[in-house]
Image (cartoon, rainbow, N blue to C red; front, side, top):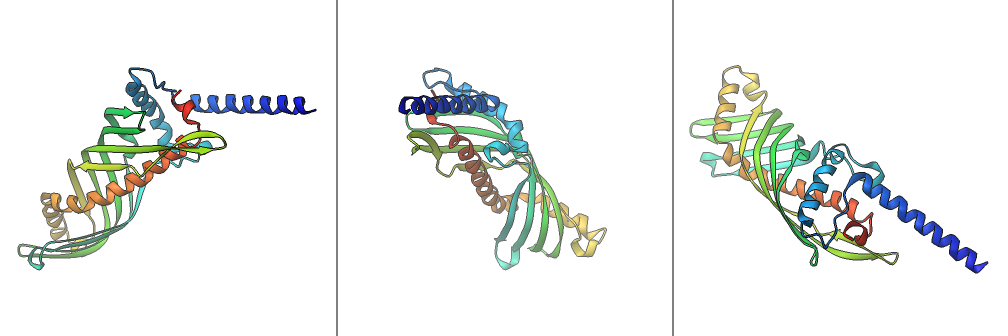
Length: 248
């Protein structure tokens, strides 16, 4: 009986391994550590995975990354004579899945990955409250806000370590680090001055002409949101498959 049970257990393990390998192959390419072009393989695998990340991978418990959500961004900058105070709530952003990796360098001995990432365009919307003093202008308002960030570049750092589960090793990432470099930005705030048809557009023009000040405050919140979301996604994938299966 004992040999039969052992054979049955072995058959179950082999079947599970085949199922796991097929599930992995359905979504990403396996990259061999000994491959001198392993970085190209990893990049190609991520590129192939991107359309699935957009809508999520339920069988891996990976949520969709379209849209990204940021609960609250608070801005306060400058003295009273040139004050910017703003709160943006319930912000929703689209375009995060259109990232392009332009340079990837991996160290599989240390499980460290560095990359440069290009974000062509992020479109967002949310509810805002604004108080702004600029030169002789005193601006207050609240309403609905839309806008876009374009031509963002990002330096990405990922550090991982191996963890043991069930006698096998898995790769787990620490919190990723994103460093965004701002490109262009456009904002449109509705209901400024009660929807005044002259003052509202003029104020939006003033805000866009000085968008760099706003971007300096918005960027850290966007970095944190991207760090949290992509760390969670990466670990949802790497903790599903043994390290030797991901990187044989």
